[in-house]
Every structure is written in C-alpha cells, then in structure tokens.
Length: 148
Image 1 (tube, one colour):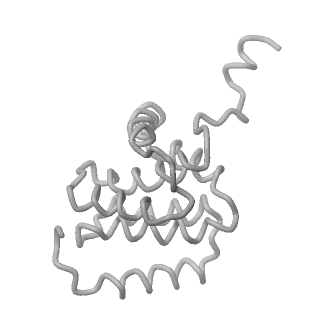
Image 2 (cartoon, rainbow, N blue to C red):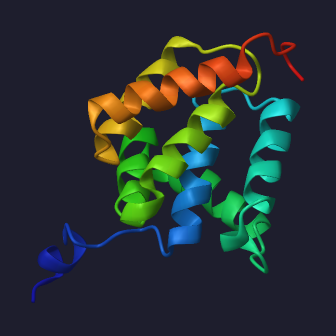
C-alpha cells in the first residue's frame, strides 16, 4: 500500500464510536446556526444524560472532539461520518432528538432546516417517517417560550 492509498482511504472514519457519533450529530445541530445558546447546550446535556446508552459515559471529551472534528471536516462531512456509526435501531431516535435540540431555542433557521434534510437523508429515514417525526416534534414544542 502506498502513502497515497493510506491517506485517501475512503473507508476510514474519523469518528471513533457510536457515542461520539450521537454527540457529534446533536452537537452539529446546536451549532448549525453558528450560535450556541445556553438553552441548546442544556437541552443537549439533558437529552444525553436521559439515555441509558450514555450511563457511565463521560460526555465532556466527546463535546471537545465534536467541536474539533466539525471544524476540521466541515459540517456535512462530519455529519455523514457520524451517521455511518448510528445503529439501525437508533436512527429514528437520533433524528427525533436532533429535531428536539434544533428547536430548543424556539426557532428554526434556514441552516437548521437544511440540516434536518441532510440528517434524514444520511440516516436513511424514509420520507413518511421523517414527516411524522417532524410533525410530532413541532407539536411537542408548540407554544414553547423562546430561549428557555
């Protein structure tokens, strides 16, 4: 194998674990509009700490790694890399949680809407299920006080 093959290996994923992938996707959601609000970080921490999957997992280093990889790879490449490591049975859950995080500040900006579409495609969630999840999350968050 030459140096070029090793460096350009398309099978290499910079994301190391499914935990990192979950945090990466959700972190990308709160930073999609290039503004991270306290309400968004609080929502993200609450969501991750409520999942049995994350019991005993130190999330802090995963945040740091997410910030660094997102900066290094760019949002779309990073999201794609993360989506590859999400277990099939978790894809719809991660998508719903991503929407929850995106709506934590009470608004949905253009960049965030684009991210919803990208996530749906990369996680390979069918259009009907995507619509259902979006509808439920919007209903759940209807009337929320902005910024809380």
